[in-house]
Image 1 (spheres, rainbow, N blue to C red):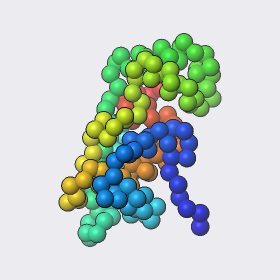
Image 2: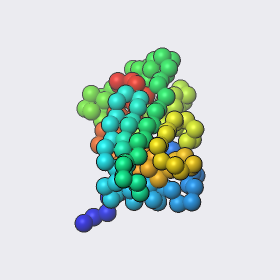
Image 3: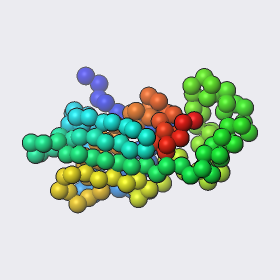
Image 4: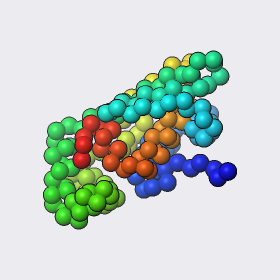
Length: 163
């Protein structure tokens, strides 16, 4: 059976950059293992909130809640402005594709699509581990990357914005 990988598209890989430079005693590799081995029992994405349950060492799965900051109105206007300014972006969007160049255009407008550091997210887990992210949260972050791989428009939905 082929090994499951995460962040296989440009957009999914950018999401995983959230975890860059963060690792408390191998929490990330253990999170990848949890994501691969079916320990994540459920993931529900609704607006800016991701709720999940992850089976750990206890009989009951741990509850995870990750919240992504909503776009400000000025961010939403900047996204719309970037699309209006570049007809190629609009063409791609109409074909249900999200060009990576849009990220650069939005970065110039100071719109933060992806968390630049872990503190840009709010994440909680019911496990007793003090580290954030713990391996359970990390597992969910990896699975969110795969959802973004399937639908890069999710990056905007996670900020409460329907592009």
